[in-house]
Image (cartoon, rainbow, N blue to C red; front, side, top):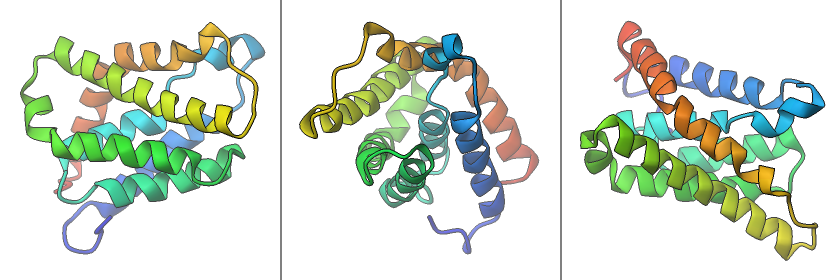
Length: 162
């Protein structure tokens, strides 16, 4: 994450911090499975908006911070978010040209990829499987993508993040 060359690095950090707060904020037991992957959505947005600034290294750092915050195996989210960042940066021009419904499906695939990597690591270290509701955050994230995109894009434009 090169924050010194261009303007708005602080705003990018604030959006990731807000996403992490939304990820760890306590929710009632019935709503925990409905929490979208805020960090994944934020990473996808910044990788699409600024692929020359936010990329695989940023995904790795954000993933390590998420591992520490959530108490998961160190490197688990780092691996998954690095993979998401790689795909987003590699295909950013194509994804940005998609209509909204195709972007939503692409975001669904990316968020499911994140969850698959996390699930793979969990199963590799011997943790038990997850219920079917494990996949809900990806579906919720897909439906929230247009709102998240609009809000983060308005923040990017308001603060001239380049």
